[in-house]
Image 1 (cartoon, rainbow, N blue to C red):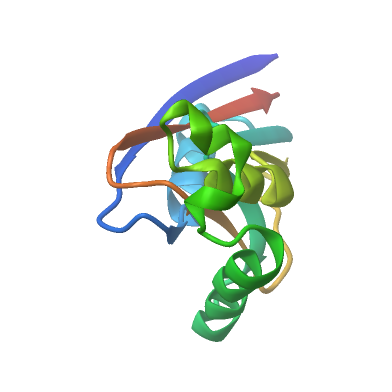
Image 2: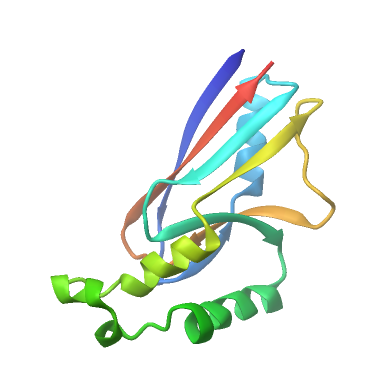
Length: 139
């Protein structure tokens, strides 16, 4: 079995951003030479997420609004975690809700996503250096 590892680094301009990483994932699959297998894409920070969804700005706005209004409002005083001197408890809860990794199939040497599916990095506590691992496994 072949394996290939690559790291993507981010330093976002905003505290929260959604970044399409599909092309980078596809490039690493191509570089790996794997024809049949899986690619793991995983955030290496507990205040970030990786997910598969549609690339549509209205949906992204809906996701951010849902996280802010329903899941974890950015209200530092409401969370016990923030009593430690942090202010990012909401980012931890958002990451827990969205998830920190995805596994995508590789078929015939290409990422095998549905017609509207893309792979995204969701940053919930940014403006500092973060990374994502892309791990390609297969034959």
